[in-house]
Length: 324
Image (cartoon, rainbow, N blue to C red; front, side, top):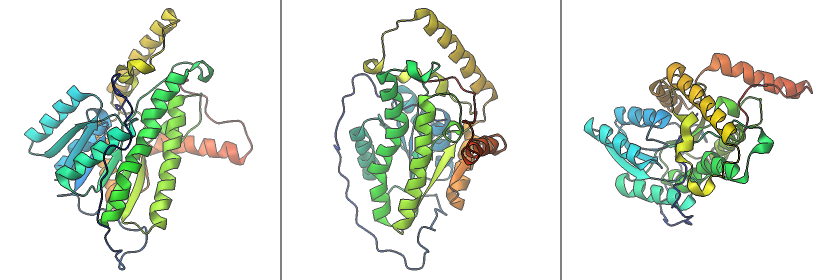
């Protein structure tokens, strides 16, 4: 379900602070439009946001094992440095760049640093994300929406805007993987998180069509994880002070904190290992598969239920979830 990526309290918005230019490669007439895929990863460059832990760390480890240059981005600077040090100790070529994906300027800086260090970028994983909620949708605040939308949806938009023009222009095979969620495909209770993840899924569908229409050597996939052993539930640790609201219900807050601890423990105890998710992602990149469902046996029925409610003019499918 993604994690990491919230803006630190002291960060102020920056606008397009880094401009990267690329030489445009001529189209390859021997390749069908929109049908090219990354067959060789070794020696190429991957960028992963939310890379300091969870799925992002799993992706970074797998890309390093494939012989790629790996650019790690995360808002948690200490955890990011530890992950980078561990990969470097294993012989990987890494660059760690503290990044707030909700800030377009910060993501532009990431693109500039990646290109300066390793040249062309071939794989982009817009993976940073945060949870949010535990309350009815009408009880959420403007700050709740700003935080979760800023990281989960606009963070993906910023990654696409900062990296994809260069990936298209250099003409080499490339792939974009955007992290959505099972909650980005299914119905259920009101949830800011689910709204953003539905947005990421639709955004990635549109990106795939745009790349195909352009005859680009770059393709795209959307990753829809189910229960994964990550700390996504405790992502409030990264919520900036400027987007926190005064606590007007201490008793309710304590109850929600206990619930989050219980859910977080279940994720870590029962969730799929991030390394297994990374294997699925690498396979999808190599086979140019769009939908990456970590638990297809349980996710596909939820998708079918939701679409069946549309086709049958029925009430919304679902009825589970933790709210806001």
